[in-house]
Picture 1 (cartoon, one colour):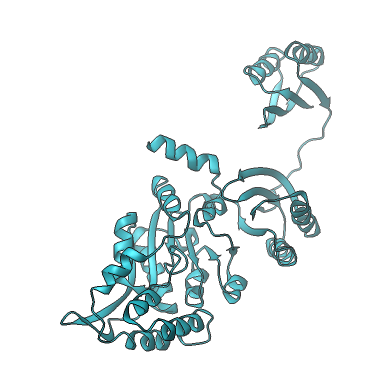
Picture 2 (cartoon, rainbow, N blue to C red):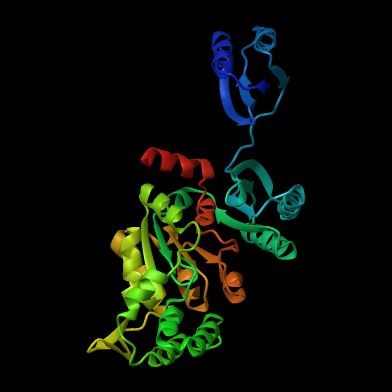
Length: 388
C-alpha cells in the first residue's frame, strides 16, 4: 500500500506515522519525503499484516495533526536492474514554465522518465536538477541539446548519475576568459603599446583560425624590448570572473584539488594561484634578459595538446582517475583538455568549443559551474557560514 501524507510541515509528523506503522507490525518498503515552501509531501510504501485496522489509525492521526492522508494499493516493484540514471541540470537567468516545458518534453521524447526535480538555486542564476531514467543516454543528451539550441533562454547539461559524479575531486581551469575576464597576453601588449595587433591574433587563435603555438610566438615577438616590470602591473590589473572566489573557496572546502592550466604567462598566472590558494599552476614562461622581454618563450609551449598532457599529469600526481576530473575552458586550445576530462565544460565559449563539450554555460558567473556538480546555493552559503 502506498500511503501519502501532505499538509503544513510540522515537527513529529514522520515520527508519528512511523510509530503507528510500528505498532501495527507493518513493514516499510520505501519512503520519500520533501518539503516545498513549508508544505510536507511524504510517501511510504508499506506491507500491512492481515487483520490490522491500520487505515483507521492513520486517518485519525491525520485528522489530529491537520494533514491529509490517503492510500493506494500498489503492485510489487519491477524486478531487475533499473535503467540508467542521468542528472540533467537546467540553468537560466530566470527559468519559467515555458523553459521547463521544453526540457521535460525533450526528456519524454527520448523515452526518459523524470524521478525527481530539485531546485538548486535562484541566485546568481536559476537552476534545477532533474534525475532522469533513460535507457539511451546519448539520445537523451542529443534531444536536450537540440531543445537548448532552439530555445536559447536556458542551458542544459547531462551527466551520468552515480558514484563517479559524486567523487569528482580535481577541477582544471583555463585562465584567460574563464577564471579571469581578461586575456593576459592582451594586457601585456597594452602595456607594451602593441595592443591592437596582439588582440587580433588572440581572437583568431581562440576561434581556431590560427595554429595556437605559431600565433602565440607571433604575439610574444611583438613584446620584445618591453620592461619586464609590466608583468607585475598586469597581475594587479587582471579582473577575476564574477563568482571566481566563491567557486574556488567552495571547492577547496569540499576537498577538491584545483589546477590552472593556461596558455598565458606564469609570471601572472602564478600570482593568481597564490592569491586564490590554487594547488597547481602551469603556463608559458617569457624570456627576460637584463630586465627586458626578449620576445621569446622559455621551455615547451602550453598549447592545446600541452593543456591535455598537463591535465593527465596532474590527475596522475593527485591519484584522481580521468573520469573524475572536471575541466573548464572557453577557447579552441581547451578542446583536448575538455575531451580528456570526465566532464568537460565550455564556459562562455566559442561555438566550436560549445559543440564539442559535455556541458555548456553562457552565464557571467563562474560559480554557476558548481550547480553542474550537483551543489545547491543553500549548501554553498551554509559552507560560508560555517567557515565564518
